[in-house]
Length: 430
Image 1 (tube, rainbow, N blue to C red):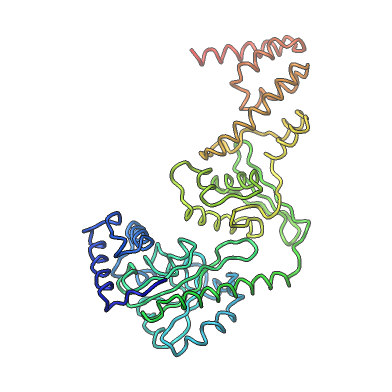
Image 2: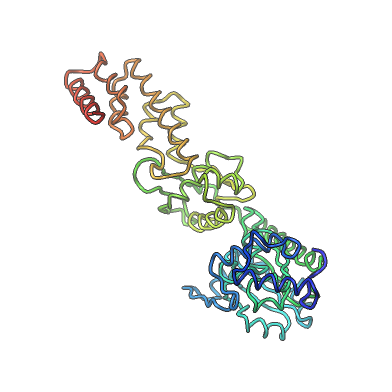
């Protein structure tokens, strides 16, 4: 990481002065000199200011109120299984060296903080303790929080921290990923004085994280294989709320109602078995507003809803094929079975979705089915045409209603219905 900017050095003094001018509003992030403030730090300061972090409090301002105890939170974290590795490689050497070792979950909650007793006492004064939230949104620029926000290893030196309480410290954090899915599951942080701001420190933490991920991978190999009968199905057609139904470990189906965003993501992943990067997925979901950090947050929430065993990261992809009503319609059309396609089609794909990629897929699915129905109608299958026109998609299909009115197989009642419906469409158009 290069030479450190110690607080007594000219570079450290300059950085403190720039930080003071930034938090008081004298200069904004766009005008920070990259020679004085690294761009990654300037961007983090901007985010910290935008989310309302108090530079005089930082992590000390946040006392979590959660429905779970710290022991419950620790027990739920995959990284907990590798705690003996962390203690062996980092904590044992930190106990008398003025250094703290922290392990955080993916949302920035500190799970364990161990090491030198004197350092731990100073850490308590700034709320750097187990159970505290040190995400960037809560504590401002800091190594564990910013490393998690960016999903990259990071060293933060002295006054690069957004909160003044943290500026006497230098921190090195490296994210930890699930070895199977690639999901971000937490990070390991080494915090001490300016003397640990070195490439050697970064290398030590990086090597520890590699050992953690290898340990978790080995544990997975020793675990029983998952139940091969486990099935999952996605229902996203029509006006009902999107649903996810999967067979649980008890062999029984479990249903979850999905948010619109989560349904969008699952549909897109099912249509892209090769996987999607965070940036590509963000672009498919929204033309303007999403970034990769938002995508990572949404993917973490999605895994909590449906289970981490279904979705992998780097790139985001489905670990196992899933059934869906969308796939059923496309498969039936591919076979030329228009009757089955209509039976599976209960309405438009996620009609409330504003995702541009979902809108394109919605149009593709609807138009493919409509074309197949009209072709079948021309071959004499008027029943398929009547079923199409009974759907919401068919109510305004003027050409379809004209075909029904003129169809040689239609009786007088059907023709009268078609004439009346066309008259209504004409009235709507003035």
